[in-house]
Amino acid sequence: MGLLDALKLSFPEALEEIKAMPIRWDRDRFAFWLKQDFPFVEALYRYQVGLLREAPQAHRAPLVQALMATVEELDWLLAQGADPGAEVHPVRQEYIGLLEELEGLAYPYRLVFLYFLNRLFLEAWNAHVEGDGPWQELSEHWSAPEFQAVLYDLEVMAQGVAAELHPEVLAHYLDRIMEMEKKAWGLLL
Image 1 (tube, one colour):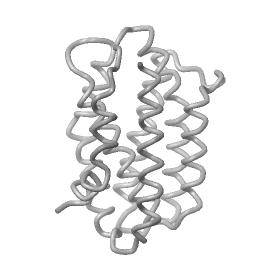
Image 2 (tube, rainbow, N blue to C red):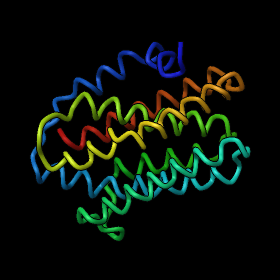
Image 3 (cartoon, rainbow, N blue to C red):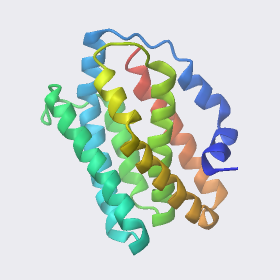
Image 4 (cartoon, helix red, strand yellow):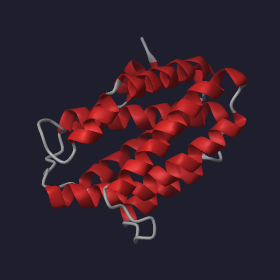
């Protein structure tokens, strides 16, 4: 059983709640959501830079690829009208606060949480997004073989450090990440 399978078994109700949310996909709501995603992705970029500084040599190349995917996403969000100086929604502020809190944990936890954040988002995205719309370009980015390779590498590395994690600490933060994902997706309700 892979790490993702273990995580799904640990939090099936929360993941299903996220996937079952009655998201409303209209252009204005989606544009707002994207613009509010910018500060979170910027915080995720800083999180990844910190992770890269502590990474063992074998993890550096995959983490650089993940960081580049985040930089590309930031560029794309700016092209969609995101304003780095705009007011940040309280839900995004709270999620950024959680990322900053996670930065205080040991490298193995932060690596697993980076994988989990990306995988959880992609699971929710795939459950909610279908058809043509303003989200199509973003869907193509996240389903591209290059991004899938980044996710695969993150999963392999996360599995490699999973034995070092204390189950209660892991469960505590995974629960908080799930809750923040629900709130973030709730901006589209």
